[in-house]
Length: 283
Image (cartoon, rainbow, N blue to C red; front, side, top):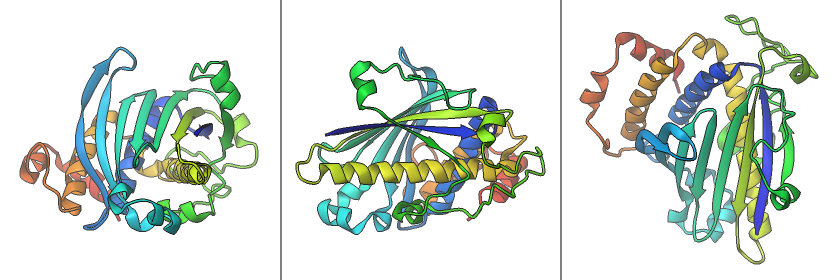
């Protein structure tokens, strides 16, 4: 079985601001979810170039989050299968993420970011058969998830109906805010799930879709909710923080660093970068 769903997530920021917000959010959420037993381990983080995406950044990560998997999934899957490897090709504003789970189960997420309010059609260039199979859901970041997966990925307490950014003056986000927002952009996330299992493949697909949706909602709520922490930072500053964050993640999860040791990494960062990391990325 194959499940295809496109999530459209409208955000009250520009494309360039979202690039910074997303990098900051990923770094902070990874730090919050990683400890000695579970969390995120960065295997590889390097530049890439190909004919499809052009130039970008390739990352390979391991997610050890067994305690957050539903009990029925832990029963079906072997323990090692719940250690998920994620590969990502980020050539912003285009990105692709692949997550092979176990056996033939896989999840692919293709994302295109556009400066609009979510009304562009077929941004992924699907054919007629793919369009017929695709479902579309508009995700409103003012509405947090309340299902099991919201517990698994986290659920912030932002109330965007009363929220106002001190640095930008943006907010609150009231009903219909997507129609009148400026600046505005949309993340078009096409999720393809392959679960070729007779009897429970459909349940597995729906569970994974719900998990991806909860992660999209929470991560994008954090992107806006943390705006006063990342606003004004540059892509170059975030790249430094990301490199230092990779080192800290691998230290937390008790794994050796891949490229160099901690002292080598720390020597690359200015006191200003360390201050940003300590203030912005805190557990």
